[in-house]
Image 1 (tube, rainbow, N blue to C red):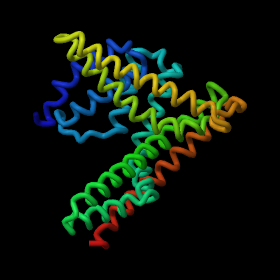
Image 2: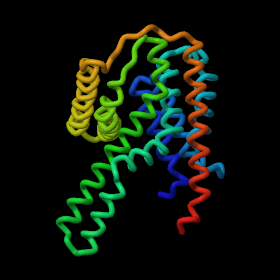
Image 3: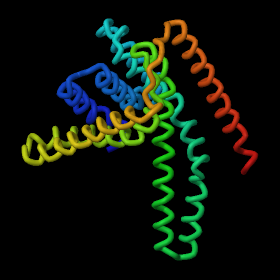
Image 4: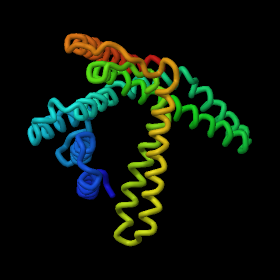
Amino acid sequence: MPRFYWGFFLAPLLVVYTVISGACPSAIRACIMAIVLFFAPLFGRRPNGVAALALTALIVHLIKPALIVDAGSLFSFTVMLGLVLFVQPFSVQMRRVFQCAWFDQRSLLYQSAGNRLCFWLWRTLYWLVRYVSDVLAVSLAAWLVSVPLTAYYFGRLTPGGLFANLVITPASFIVVVAGCVGMAVSYFSLTVAAFFNQIAGAFTQIMVWSAEGTAACPGMNLEIARWSPVQVALYFTAVILFAFLVRSRRKNARGLEWLGQ
């Protein structure tokens, strides 16, 4: 199916899943944002995360203005903005730190030499290291922008979130996929649907254990004085300036790519 028509197929499924899952603020945000992104090509626009998030925020808060002061909604939109702004540049840096290119080159060398066993071994290591670096990038981006809200609402600083998300991020993806599949097959077989629901439940429990275990470690869940609105505003001002700095560096790097050709 051409990408142009994805929205017509996925939008109804997203709406149904959002309603069935309880239509919490984060689910509503994710549903509307996904629909906006999928329908962007229909209007001759390239999918843009920041624009889609801004339009989603406008739609959500016009429909339900009370969500402007809802903590769950604020966390959802703020974390999503952090992911849109920082995941890609953080991922590039993390892959450099973990030397993903070196693992890739080693696997290609063995492929050129005709050693299939070593090629698949090093290729597997490459994808594993790349996966860990990307999950760390997602975790760091989400944690970076959630720090002030956590400090403001709960008086907590949670460095452990960086490590808990290594488990929570992939587990949450499996929960969503299993939930969607379970819902889809429930029209044909309740037994198969129950199986996928059990998978979703198991990985949900894994997420809970990961969060609780990390929080129990020394220094991973610190109680601090609650931040004032001024402190929160100053922090986000610094984050915005940092985002502009990262964006300008990425533009400069792309502009100089021809020198290496």
